[in-house]
Image (cartoon, rainbow, N blue to C red; front, side, top):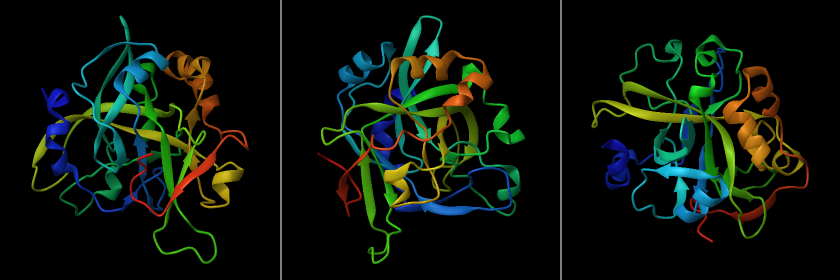
Length: 249
């Protein structure tokens, strides 16, 4: 029921432009912007990623996906790949929740050796997160404050995906919503490639662009799957927009 009605309840998930995230279970909490888009049609995702079933309902273009928004993910089932809704933000490590009444979730995962994340590295918890562009806050000298820079695989913003993890979790993500049990996801990060480093030198999402990479992430043993946690080769990303909280080509 939740998946079928996810978009109907989107106003519950409104978030500020930037959100605190915990990239691993170290003592450091990094504040950074979390924003991407997925504007291709549902049929395009089914075709590109060889999806055999979905329960998205009527999918609108998602030109600005913020933390805790519902977004499409692709999981592997016995019958084939399945497209469904999940909310962006995996359970936060407990040490960061002391004294807090909500857990909005962790959007990016860097330290896959952490005991907190290892429980979700099996094939049953891996997913593909389709996207057409993603944004990083501009850290170049002289850049305006909170200035998003949008990256894509080309000006036409072809489909690709992030390497993600997902689970079903019960928590209070927002006080006004109360306790909920929902599917949720996050995606892996890695050092930036040349294009992203010029704008945001700390990290970039793990991006998968080929069918063999999608199959490897969804089905390979953990050690082989984690070989994919590396930057996209230099020269494969373009800056396609700047300054906007949405990328609606």
